Length: 360
Image (tube, rainbow, N blue to C red; front, side):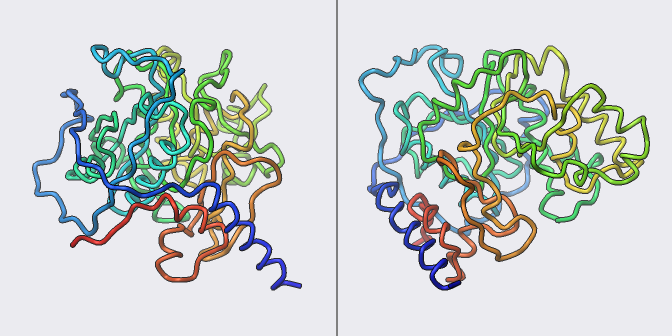
């Protein structure tokens, strides 16, 4: 019976590839847009950049449909017709970030109207992005790890302790004031629907929108010390908090700035250092600030847990219902499993967006 279920999952994945797979063609490179910020977030370190361990093929050029709003070339990043997407870039997860961008462009009805904000803590990544996406609109923002290093506490997984995981806390400060809304995405996902649909999420009076999972055991995200101390657990008084995954969020940066949520998150991180109120890296501070105050988004926009959560190498199925975004949150990343020739069935859905290629 088990082999039948595995075969069925593999067959479904292969069938979906036929629908979702992009063609891979080559086009000449073009210039990227560099950020002109001079604040602490954008001071690149002076040390030599690490050597390229790999290179990426060029993606096809994706063009806007005839009914797309024309972007004002003179307004740059401030054009009101743009869809803003923020993603981190680092060498360990760069392959996933490139695949995520590829998937967004492949399925967008207006790909030339998507503007990417790349958050980095390492240099020499811009050229790799530019070589794969010749006409991509993007800026690169340097996030200084020292901004948060002293506030980060140990976690259940070392990967959760990386400073770049906390860059999302500072998007409202890093991005231009004219950018009033942004979609934040993790590097281990692909989008198989038009990103503009997610962009149009109605946040109402809320600062962030995300798929919520109210069936999850919310108490496990905090320590007994948290729940036993009214000073901490009282943060949820008057709210009905639900778990949400911070790897897919629509964020109202204008409201974030007006309230000063970055400082609120930092205060919880400082409390964590002294009182150990959670174990899961950058997620709990977001839950503390926003859980119960999140604009709901359909679950189709975050089919998460495909990396097996904290179980290395375990395979997961999709949740019931339609799919617009597949998210390999957890320990198992599709590129590692594909390279080891031990992929999960759903990893084959990620593979068509992989532009990885060894340097020649």
